[in-house]
Image (tube, rainbow over all chains, first blue to last red; front, side, top):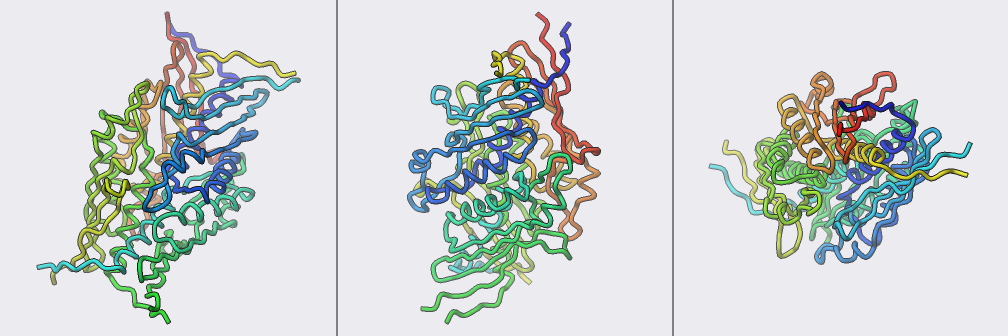
Length: 123
Length: 123
Length: 123
Length: 123
């Protein structure tokens, strides 16, 4: 038989980290963007996700080179895609700190969300 | 029998205006926001839509009073809703200028998109 | 000086058509999809947009060949992109019928929204 | 000093569960819906998220009573909101099973994502 585990702070910290990255990705992917407007989009995404529960800090960087390569030649813009995003997120759930990221993984050809580090706040 | 009309600049200007407001609404509604982050969200929305075809200018204002009233008491944020948005859009398609808006209509209880003005550019 | 035009049914029919296509595109782009789930996504998109004001009918077709070519080799799915969408929309605003479409335009390399036909309902 | 923990299957299972719920919420909130179209939206949401990595099963139920209460009296539809969603998700990451949910929490007045159960697959 499977054994049920009790749910702890660490579990919740990781669950909450995943929520934030999933939310960010699906809220903002598809936003029209070009090289003149990318700064404001980066800032708004980071600030928007920062208000969600347990977020300690977040940085959002959008790859200018990919934007440049995707600009439509007729209309001069493209859409935000997952592969353009480089996100570093720090979560704090009670005594636990989780660092997680979203970065394009070239080998997998996939915008990969990953747990980078789990630690306790020193008492 | 119904009569087919030839499609002109004015038709396209209005069609394109609608596209922008529909896009704005469904791209950004749901974004987490509070009173500290609303400035960056307004700016990013306006800049994002400004890169789309035929947009001459756009202003986006988010209602702080509604945000304040919707802030979750536990978590201190809410989500961007259509009724918070006050958008003024000016489109220029060839020789035609269209002004359109998105504003909450209290009587209809509905975030209403509306054509405000249609004019020709003086030759 | 520019001359302001009075706003008529035809203007509103075209404006409303644009709203629907902009909404559809930015609401559903980014949805995870594969060849087993594409039927339900097509149906839900068409039904969702059909409830909006002045929509007479809508068909939504998602290109299986593009899905197949975009499936991630590790995870077996991709995201709905604008270029996969083939949408035919019929709007009815008072006495005016507008047919509009969203189709990928290979020459422009762009998912193009277009007015297909404008007609009056025969009296 | 804080102590770094090694990252295990359980951590990843929880992180991945969070990603799916965050994605679901922010992809589909805002979709136009009424009582005639809610079935197709439920089905499409469940199928869409089911294709993402490590999802074993998912059920999505949208609250008809809230839809009914939110229908606009002029236009006869509303938008999908987080509070309408009742989602049960089962994730399988290697040897770990995680059950997680999204349900409206009346006390918090918040659409709450929650870990319901963590267990090992019996060997």
